[in-house]
Length: 192
Image (cartoon, rainbow, N blue to C red; front, side, top):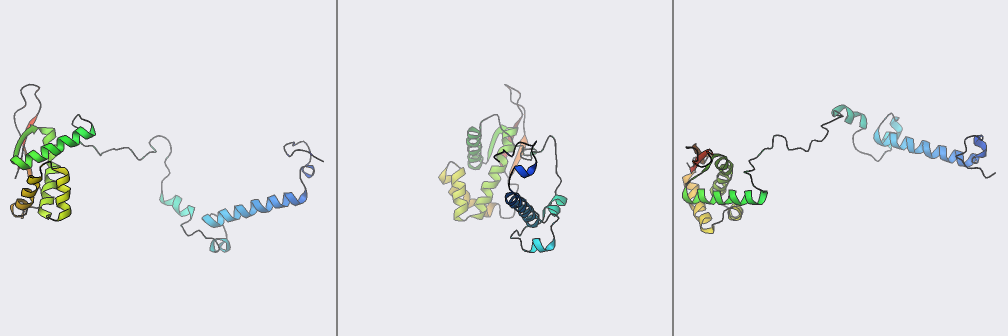
């Protein structure tokens, strides 16, 4: 008889034939055994040896990692990655740091705010490290950051002998008097 399988009031023998039932049971059993053999979860050794899965089993993975639930599951927040934003968007901040780096290397000493001096110190030290290294790739990296091409060439000539005995800390930040208009903390950054 043509009876839908969703009708649960009829006995199961009216739903489908015995052959179709056995096929479904065998497929379900095969897929279940295949899953357990592939991931090593409660499967006998005969199934895990014939599996094409070559990773570690799920039971060993679960013991190595702590499963966290609730709030704070994301580990993509930038905690403790703070950098001075300098009150500017990214493109303006990069242009400001490039200009300050160029001027520190050109003049040897500039006066700016304390936060800007501390932010530019890293970039000036990096440019001097590139100048000490002196190869073509370092020169091209410095040309990509410093605005003045002639300044890069003079830096690469002078840096190896001037800073040969020093392994870092090529700049010094000295605090000065606050700015008169807005009382901002000021500093002098200079090459050592």
